[in-house]
Length: 257
Image (cartoon, rainbow, N blue to C red; front, side):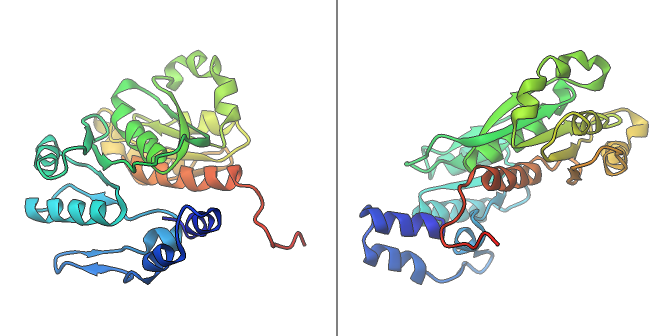
């Protein structure tokens, strides 16, 4: 829970001072031996710890999910397999899994509608798994997300016919493999930040995403930041940070100077 959210709940009477104190008095992390769960991460950074599922031993993964859900009523993990979903579901029946993005999550009971606007665009249908990882990460963290898929540069009219949507977003995530030109095209059309995500989609000389990565890093369009190959999660996280800044009202007590 965010520190500001906690204080607002105390102010409104939704939470007692004792309950709030209990949240703040929790240890900064819980040592499980094989993992140290960062229980104060959301207080510090505004985002809870996220589980990277791939490669984790079964019993560790189940225990981590159980501890996080017990503490906060929610948990989210990336790069989960169907087998891991079935395993965790046996212990947390209302866990949900999306086989496209491979996100395994338990949503909070008091989930609120998304705020602001993040547009997630991808070049081709083969890029959708990475785009969905970005979109669902941003949605989990509270952003309103609009998807615009299969709008690559080989048919740029598909993007241009949705230009109003792309230009109205607080942040645009551009996901593309092959040569990765989509980010440059979008970067030249919008005034708000673009987060470029190279994917490993492509033929031999694409070098498993390296070609798209180099194109995006060397873009002549301004306002583009680039994350790692296939890192939809990182793009969704950063897009949410930008979206929160764009959507938030000015904080009370801060000088305008």
